[in-house]
Image (cartoon, rainbow, N blue to C red; front, side, top):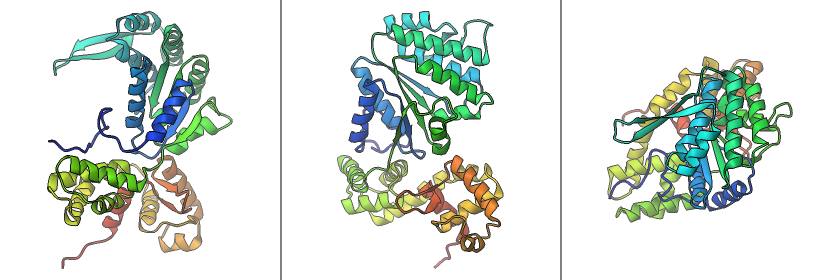
Length: 380
């Protein structure tokens, strides 16, 4: 039996910890043709959750479209990803495929043999006509025609939706999408990890999407259930893991869904019996595996932002602008801390914990790694 823990998106047919309430509520919203903003820190399992919801909807006859907007480079890119989402889900369903070909006038599908033996699908503009905002408007109009001619429920998931703000035409893109979406009898899920930016799109009175969707935060999994789930997966794979060790494992990651799964993956590779020693050794592997990601994060922010992030990793605080805290960690001026904190919040690197009221790094393993950079373990 192979390792039961996943380092990538959890397959829709794999064991899934809890989320019963979220699955029920979000599926109900989708079936009611409501629009939802689904948000949480990175790697909380949003995409896996939505994929599972879309699988349930598809089993009941719905047409489910999924477009990942991470890294969009232009308005044309946004339009092409939306068109591709339609062709990807319809290419094996003859009536829907014909409907998509008739409706999606701005792009045509391109099918090519894949080196692995399958078929790959991409899209290209249907002609040398429109581009930019005109192309996006035409594509959304075509998508609306596809939705309106499809008898079944259509559900559209737009992953990392906040990425559209990186485009110079961002506000006009928002306006086109909002105008078109409100005319469609479909359900849209807007998914994202950069929460401040994403929520700004939907909660700022000056923005086109203001109050057009249900805000739905995805919370941490209940610690007890996460620990029991981890222990249960070990037991199913003939590996010994007490609930106490399951609790030890998930507590080290701050009960973070992705990191708990990854830590369990490394523990499984190291030992047939889960012990405190194997958990600690696996934790070292986990931190080492994330080091390139963390280094890239630090390289992408300013020296003062790094300093503030390091300070919060070392000591959380309820008062970020308190003179004592600023002096203690050498953070310079109040204005500098204000500017850096806003930037770090937009990058979803720091947050104010709703329960404790303390500012802290969002990523618990990044915080551990930062502390390790500031402390040197002495040989015994």
